[in-house]
Structures are given as C-alpha cells and as structure tokens.
Length: 188
Image 1: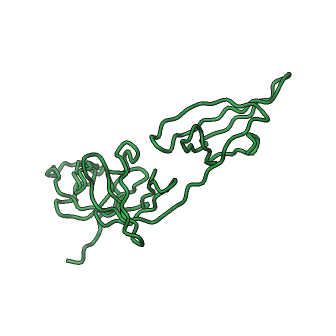
Image 2 (image 1 turned 90 degrees about the vertical axis):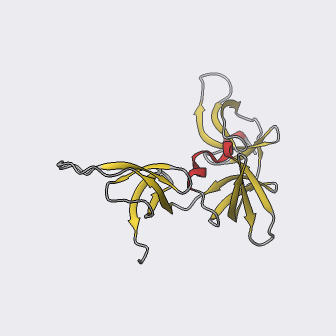
Image 3 (image 1 turned 60 degrees about the vertical axis):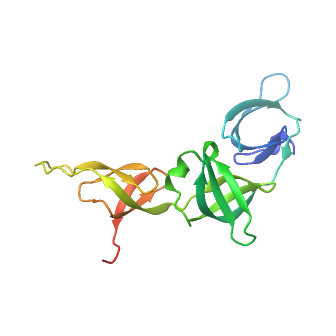
C-alpha cells in the first residue's frame, strides 16, 4: 500500500513484524517530497517506534484477526488461552498483556488478536467481577468525605475500595482504569 493510504489503526508489516499505526503526521515542505511521520506500536512486544516515510514509499499491509478464546491458567510468566472450537492452546507472555493480566480469571472468555496463528493481544470485557480475598479493617472517623481502603483481589490485584467492602465480597472492576465500580450482590 502507498504510504499516503496509511491511517491511524492500520496494521502494517515491518521486517516481518506486525505494527499498529498509532499516529500519522503529514508534512509538506516547500521543496521536495511530502513527509509522513508515523508512530508505530510493535504488536509482539508493545514497543513504540517513530519512523519517517516519504510520499511514494510503499508499506506492506497485514491482517490480524479477532478470535474468542477462554483463559485457562498462568504458567511462569505466560498466560494460556484455549480456542473453544478447536481446543488449541496459545501462550501469551506477561510482557504483551501488561496490566490486563491483573483482571484475568480462570474460565473467562476474552477476544484475542491473532497474527498468523499467534495470539498477540487480548481485549478484556469492560467490567469484571472479582472476589476480595484480603482487606484492611475500616476505621470509623467523623468525616464528610467517604473513606477508602486497600483490598487485594483473587487475581492478586490491589484496588482502592469503599470502607463497607469486606473480605469475601465480590466487586465489579472497570478493566480500562482498574478502578472499583460497585459491590455485587451475590444473592445470599
């Protein structure tokens, strides 16, 4: 594809590695060819690179496909996902998942991004429900502002919660921000 056709979120192949175009800046100098400055994210390791192209340069487009998979377990820095149709398993490294690993619960269905039979990213549901396994004792103080405390969830993630949340409660977390949303009624 011509460099002029590349837009934000286009997937391109550079030296055999898929990249996502994060931004494109077009500069037309007074003399010479137009310049395209691109910020590209490596889809294998998440690193960013700034690359400059000139008008007329060619880039190789690539396809990544979404696929629903089930999270099974973690094993020494890798997270194992299974295709529920073929039962094939894929390992995704913690360096690729980053903070998303804090919200993975065994049996959870996630959307994976596949490149040539390799899972290179996951998309979590916007909200997940996780159990509180440890929390501090709430101190009763006479303040107008609501009081918060730290809680450790079943995945090991620590989040700030309101003082009424207790160990054993199930809470809803926003996976985009990592913040507490609400306590979930479990029907006791």
